[in-house]
Picture 1: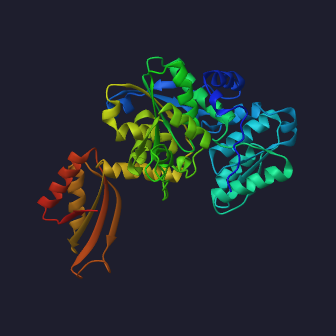
Picture 2: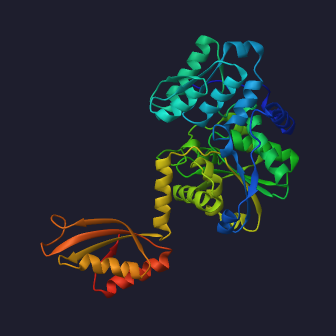
Picture 3: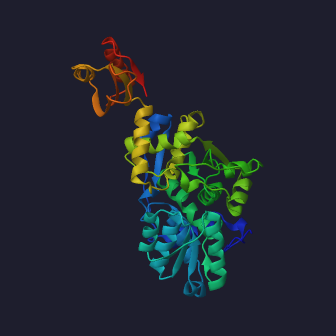
Length: 411
């Protein structure tokens, strides 16, 4: 069953005045994060690029902006009763933190599958966490039921005018700190961030181009804006924007403003996470890197422009980050995985190692199966992982091995 949108003011008044008021309201409670040029990203995409580093917020994500503004708008009665929110990620921590700062009791409903680290982080900000449901939709329904039963104010992650206005403060800071920008790109989940930023720019600088970006498995806003049925699903590293039901208020704002939402493949998001980590020295979660993924996917659209985008979140699991970086090394040809069927005789491994070393490669992993995997008892299987500078050096190593009459297969 659909739930009513909780708003403090009507949709048409989510504009520059409300966003500036939100900026004044949250000043001191939310970090004014830097907007810095990134030469590494700029070189990769052929544009001048600035990064808004909202991964530096206390909870590691931009969601604090909307949560802080929405909570500041509560009446004295609502503060006394407490608030409730549904989230499996950054919105949960944002509401928990700012409710704690204001002395407001907060309940956060999270699906049962939520990783324990996220539960612990949310509880560490003073919130009561309720685990309920197998899906986000079930958790949301339960949160609404608790709100009605206990008289709590539901803090929606994106379909709320106060939240949208708070998120829009990001764009104000970006153009104040980098006034030369002519293009802004924002990730889209439920749409609150893009809607708030687009509403601000529509009045402040209507010539400035604003885009949204979604990952290809979850292009719900792009589909809605195009009048298409919503079809989403599948695993994604950009789980923070993996949303099926976008906000009605953000959708109406973006439709009215004519905002285009670009769609990027999963691989581009991984590439963006790796580029930010290696090139810009910035840690980004998948959703937080989606803006850079749009620049990588659509370089012709941004070539020669002065583009600002946001690293809107940095809460990525360490194992996921390491996997992304390793996968990118393989794609770039900086790690070789080679398979051999080699003769089972003394000195062969030594010869292979010498040929690789002489070509400048560094063997970082060896798998040697002598007894069971080889096709005959006269041979043995060997698999090597080799670190190289680039694909040219990798090709030189393969040539050196083939010159020794070894049959080499890339894995």
